[in-house]
Image (cartoon, rainbow, N blue to C red; front, top):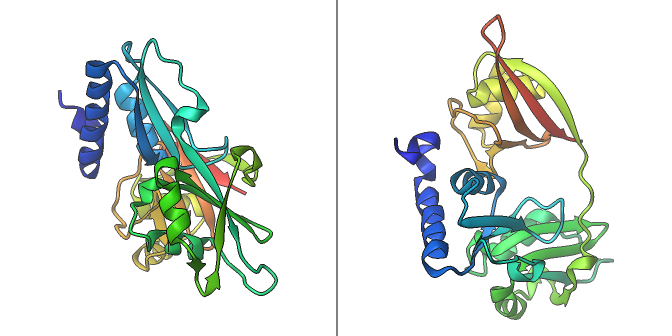
Length: 257
């Protein structure tokens, strides 16, 4: 039985990568640190490594509430610490009284540096304060290269992780039913839309699944998937409970307040 059949076709490359990481730890008996993984990638890694006796794993992204985290795979003897994740927290200094900078501006400027998104963790914007987490190995490069965000001149200061401004997120849990696990049907059920409205949101590029734009109305959703609909907030499938007597899927959904 192939491991690939348990996952989506487009996840095959990442599955191979996780298996290579596991083999590295098995063969070298040394830890392996990954780049930042989104929640879906974290779930895939967890499923592949599972309760492996010889290889363990842990995630950390700087704070309990962050979404993007680095993983460390390590042999039994190893004791992973927060320092092993090699994270740097950078604070943005800019003229707050005269300029407004928002999350998309920060992400866009970071992506213009020529680094992969996987080198960056979460971005925090609160009351004019801006911070973001980067992989420690690219900290010096980012500090040297990032001198503007939008039209604002900026400078960066490295600060301790303990000073992170991440806010507690409050999720509500609801149980609902849906006739199908297709993206359009699920979005309609979770956000209380008509199916036609859900299709419109998807085809207009207003829906992300696992932090990636998804315009496929027939995309089949799975447990652990994270959705965001522009202007409507975020939700995740916490569990799929099976079918009702009326042949509908009963799902438990977490919604961000």
